[in-house]
Image 1 (cartoon, rainbow, N blue to C red):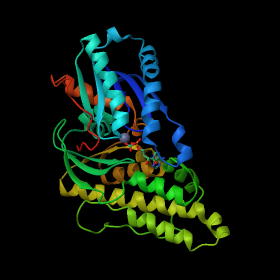
Image 2: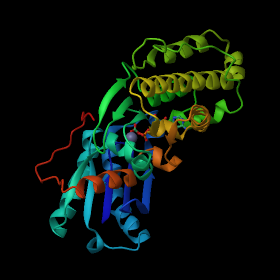
Image 3: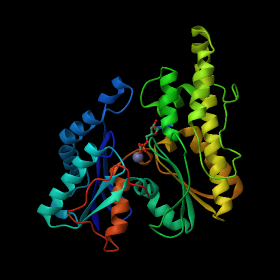
Length: 331
Ligand code: KG4
Ligand code: ZN
């Protein structure tokens, strides 16, 4: 089954062609316009999707050496995300499905992230725990069987990626914050400053990152401008260490609580190299099976949406034309 996936929930315009677990193409255009505003401007995001999506679909089809007629179905993100951005992808998908007479399905963006490593997930067996850490979400999810999800932990305030973005702003590093912090942190000492690990010992599986962001802000404000520049690498590295530490600690607690031996990492924050290295080593040491998406499959992309869409379509699940965008959709 050959599926065209479409993803336009935030500031990546993406189209992909996936055949079962094989990615034939995955074209991602990251909108540059938002950097100068320090965050995503919804109106500009929708307009850029509108402008770019048809061309991106054409490139995805051509890279996959196929045509619209060669598709067996379509999949599109319908939530959660920015309403105006989701509308563009959903409407383009409906129009294609209508004119091509092909089955199509709306996909939950968070499910898409969890299924970025779909083939590995199925291979590891069930139940598994998924840790989703992106710009909008930080969740621990128990997956007892294919396409079944139970949220067992979540952030009570900021998402992990949001914390990276806000701390980058405090340090004057620009948007998006995650890659900028990682770059600066590479020359810093992660042990230099001990930032708080909120809720680490709370006994539940929830997260809180807003206090950590404030602690970095207060610490930075206590420095002279000269010290702030000299210490920025240490601050970035110490902040990054605190996030990794909490994410790993809670993942381990979830695995233990639900007697799972497999962990799936998902979402944009998983691009972080020190985080990937920490989870790989620590899971290996404890005999935990671990799936981490390739870096380009961590941040928003249409291949993960096509993977998820395929798994639904192959079970005969389809959407109908009354489906609306769902900006606050939960898993
Ligand atoms: O999954 P994603 O592309 O979009 C959402 O669904 O939100 O995640 C984007 C988030 C941003 O907050 C960004 O700062 C973060 O992922 N991110 C990173 C890295 N690359 C992207 N965080 C830490 N380290 C990175 N290398
Ligand atoms: Zn995402």
